[in-house]
Length: 168
Length: 100
Length: 341
Image 1 (spheres, chains in turn cyan, red, green):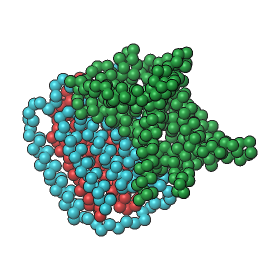
Image 2 (image 1 turned 90 degrees about the vertical axis):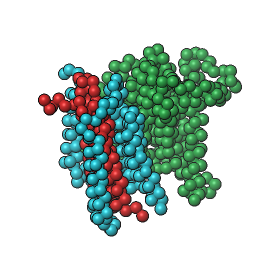
Image 3 (image 1 turned 180 degrees about the horizontal axis):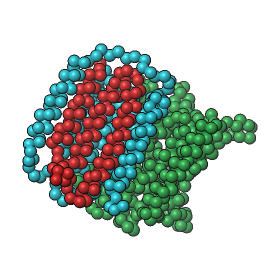
Image 4 (image 1 turned 45 degrees about the vertical axis):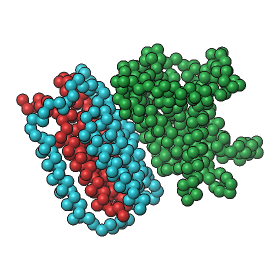
């Protein structure tokens, strides 16, 4: 019961803030709604027993990535708003139609493939809390992908610095 | 009783909102934020199945998704800043230099 | 019902009131300490030795006119102080003030909750507070607050990296992210972690000074350059919220330093059971905790009264070129030692 209440309340908040993100005119307000959306998603992770990921979500997304967005929005201090002119190629209509089609498809998949819940033991080979299990999986089973991800972040960091620098 | 189907529907709806944002808005910063919404929709699915199967591998994948999102945001915003310095716009319809 | 609802609510009530009272008296203490350093008297008029000054300040702030600039973004302007104060207060949920005690025949633990990602929770929630500062400066629609808020957010993000990196090496030593488990680990190790991680403690404290915008890193509030900082346009209770958040963050940094490095509620020499030290065990744990936290708070004020302010480029150079490389080196050394031992 409590799980259902939490799920529905968080779902409404997540979807509501997501709609506000894409529909608000003011870009700074849009960024703010994005933060609220991410915080609600983090709360959803907590209800799913993934505390470590919830904290990472707040730390990386809400505390890092979105601050970057906010910085860029403030630096790109727009003299003329980007959406004043008419949409030349009717992309708005196409967008909604395509989105509706994808929604229909996803709902169909979800409805037809709704398996009966069969929780299994899985490969939880390490006892302990969520952090220990995630850490074990990350550093033992997925060590190579983890290193590749670190290389990706390094490359992205160097690329961002090169792009943002005025002259090298 | 909340089944994985509930989470799939939630994540599908979030995904769709992100897709609409990408297709409809012309401000590239908003488009980037819509992509973050899409990535979050994916993460919700991964975590829901991780909970369903009592297996942490879904959470490990979600961590990789977050890492990729961080890399994407850093490079993408760098491109936006570089572009804005040259053309004074963030409208994606005016970013058509590669067509020439 | 009693264990799951009433007792936690009571704890939260006591904690929030305690924190807010502590914060108001921190302001008085700061004025007094700086006055002593400068051979002045400080506030003396309200009550004996000025001890009722915080109440006078609070009344003044509450009855002051609440001004919103006409060109300001109303919603964001209102939300910014709230965004600053909420993370500063909810961090206290995982700080362990003491171990379990017997109270009225029940066993009560002296912390609101103990989650197994406690330390990460503190770091991540603290990183939300930066939004209030950026948005407060932006929404004022005024140039000095905007400059100050850009300075503040760049500073907070830079030093957050250094502090988080530093804390990782402490986590390696402690082997847990739960604040209570970290204190227990210090009991099991028979030593406070400051003796195992002295570099980490120094880095953490410098980073803590910078993250709370305190002197010598109070660039965002440099009155001579910015007419007051990101909260220039705020008045009355909204200004007070920014002020409360700054002091609450100081208490958080001190309490976390106590918990992670100085043994939390443990007495000095936590595992030596000899007669000359027995009297140390008579003092309850929470008094040790509060005393240690108070020492750090005093150091905050002492530093402010002593050191001149950094220049902005020096601040950034210190953060990126000294603290972060040192934190990474410390982490590598810690990892090697941990593997080899």
